Every structure is written in structure tokens, then in C-alpha cells.
Length: 244
Image (tube, rainbow, N blue to C red; front, side):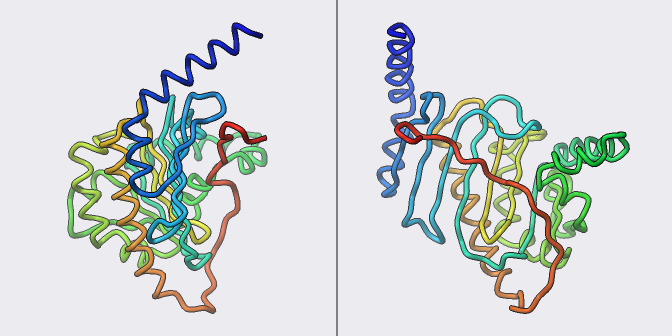
């Protein structure tokens, strides 16, 4: 027990020093930086963020299609509950569509339905949107939404320009990346073997752009609009040190 405690203490100290630049950046934004309970990841909470409270987590992946470690973000925005939009890298979309096909042709179809995460269900349920103004956007990203019109309005904007720019370095070819507008919030999930401040900052800026454009699209939805829905969990809370 003592050896285990000492090892945990050493890991905690080492990782606290390793992520010090991210810690200081978070504090400069008025956010709270907390190590995960096992000290193998961290969480940042910024309750006064704009356009809404922001949570950033880095740690072990919560999705089977992202190996190793991931960065995930959630921006709480209070958008229309049925504004359901998604962007992911094209190679990941192809991979997930193949997985879905196998699941739906398997004899355990009912069980497969229950196990599929929301982003995979949406590939079956919602129409795709094909960008016309940018070849890079069209080739590198797959886009779906509750309607193709809303999906197009979201992505053919400043968000599309940011995604094209990100494809040059931040999100290179084949880099697993998912951006979703779901249950009134924005979610971003991407593979990240090591948490580095420049990449975290760039992805926060991308999420903020996506959030602003989602607010604009949200204004187009009528209060009485009826849209298809799905249900599953897009975010699993990580336990912080000191939490039960």
C-alpha cells in the first residue's frame, strides 16, 4: 500500500509539472485546472466562458474508434434541443460506416443497436451535406445533420474556413476528430497522444468558432419545429481528485 501511494505521489508531481503550461493558461482564462483521480489526465472547468460554460478533459479515450488518449471538450450553450449536427474526418466516417454495416448485418443486431454511440447512429439516421465551395472541406471532412440545409449553413461559414486551415497541421489527414451539436451543447473529441498547450489552444478556438456559428444556425429553428432524435451518451464524466 505504501509503495502504491508513493508511486501515485510521484506520478502526480511529474504530471503536474508536465502540464504546468496548460495549468497556467487555464488560470489566465479564469478556469480551474484539476488532475484526474489517477493523475493520468486532467480537467479544466471555465464556468464564465463565452459563449457558454466550457469543460476540457484530456485522458484515456472514451471511444473505441480513438486509440490511446484523447482531448474532449463540451461547451454548454442552451441551443434548440433538436439542433443535431456533426462533422468528422472523412477517413473516420468511412471506418464507422463500415463498422455500422457489420453491426447491422450481424445476428446480434439488437445488441449492436444499443451499443452504438450517437455519432455512429447519426451516420445512418441523418442526411449528409457535401460542401460546394471548398474542395479541401469536401475531401477531408464528412458532415451530417438533422437536415442537410442546417448542416450546410453551419459549415459553410467561418467554421468551414477554420476547418480548412486546421487540416494543414492541427487535424492532418486521417487524424480522428468529431465535432457535434447535441442536446443544446457543442462537443469536440479528437485523438491526442500528448496534451500540448498550442494544440489545446487551437482546438478551443475551433470549438468557439463552431459555437458561434451554431448560435447563428439556432436562430433559424422555430419553436415548434419537429426533428428526428436519437438517445445515447456523448460525454462520460471523468472523476477528479477528491470526488467520489
